[in-house]
Length: 148
Image (cartoon, rainbow, N blue to C red; front, side):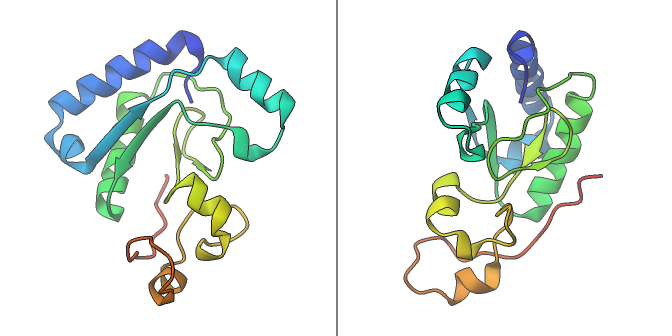
């Protein structure tokens, strides 16, 4: 997550990257920006220090491993010299102190942790999801990203 003083720089670099990189633009299905000030996040953390209360400020939605892998590579290149908060949003894996990844939705991870791998619930467990008939998550494929 970006620090408050770097938020606009990150947004600008991200939008410029999307505008100039066809493959990155095609990899991203949706983009969400939530400019929570750090002081608000600290209040939330003080009231309830659960890691589930760490919210991302910028979210890119991609589909599939190839798109996710390309997006990570492009973001690392675009944002390589911008420091982050070094604080992971809930259920995310660190790429850099600015960039984190996850697969799936926060509320599904809270409500259906059995459909995710391991205690950190970062990645889907595709076998469990695909066998379940009562859950409304799209059929999934297992993958873990190469973050190096």
